[in-house]
Image (cartoon, rainbow, N blue to C red):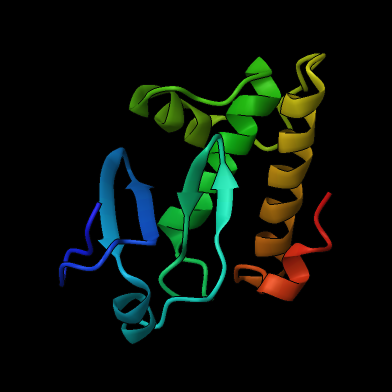
Length: 134
């Protein structure tokens, strides 16, 4: 996949779901830096997501929170836009499903730590801070 602004290979992929509307951007490293891209990414369910800035937008937070809450309730990641929207309506204190798959449980813990970090600090973690996640 090529950068939306030039013919170089896109290495930065941004995906946000805001009130059920999905938007995507695909940029090369150079153009990513020009729009103040941070130099790290976070992977959720094999999808690499990079924020536009270190400030967490409401839609980014809703997306991560929705994924975490859906995973907490159902024991798996959402697989469709409808399930992502459902996750955004699930309260943070929903009872946790039994997650027997160690990889899924590890992903839940990482996502839960990421959401907790963003809620506490109002921003994405830096590359150095990502090392602190389970």
